[in-house]
Length: 365
Image 1: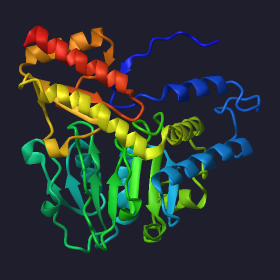
Image 2 (image 1 turned 60 degrees about the vertical axis):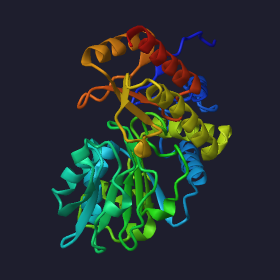
Image 3 (image 1 turned 90 degrees about the horizontal axis):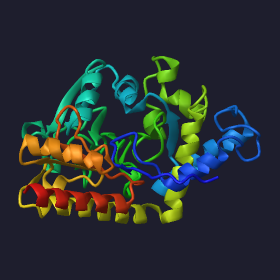
């Protein structure tokens, strides 16, 4: 029986919106997964039924992102936050140094963790300007002998996003793509490693995707705990221990949905359309709404803005919640307002929010 449920306008920054069709399919399969008589959550991760789900998810991701054959795709746990530690543990060897491009809170956290394991430097930073922009490529400084250069491709808190990535030559490039992976085509071959928490564009929370070049993996430190070695998971197809099976199942279904709607070309078209309708409300407000990010650094995933006064901002957020717009408060560290328009957020939600913004301005301008 299909329930008549009113769906919220979900602008949460993560965990975030999932495609309704994927949720409905998961609902149908929840108790009896494809004739097994068990839920996907009850299946052994060593069973043929689960292994098919696992491998299908990897295959979908390789296909959608055009991942070359010389890369491993891993499903890990611990979120991007654990990757902040695992990366230097594996790749920042003795006598080596690493560069970090500072674009917000998450790059700061990654930098702080790396400092615990070796020498790190800030290759560039936009902190002085309150992280309103992505550093220009000419501002990024590295010597060429670094173990790696790390960046965060999209900054959920400040609403900025890289439009072009640096060419690093022999220096391995690593990117935290937690909040914009699969939102647009990316040339994976430019990176030695890409990692992302699943809970923005890929599925529910609990899964971390790592895409790593095999040659880079061979250089990893082996003198660390077994579970913290990327090689452990690569050798075992991410099945060394029990993986988050339900999360991986959902991830695979989300990837299937992306394929069904037309792949990344259609995804980026939709994302540009969704972001534009909200940015237009900001840009056409004559300063009533004040965008945080500089125009050439604006994110398609996280639209951040303030109102002219703190009182208006509070009233806006209260009224937005009353109208059914969920998750539009800015991050607790900086306040303000934020609409996260990840892949599964429908255009209709973004259009409704922009109309609410226009109406609120008419009433309070």
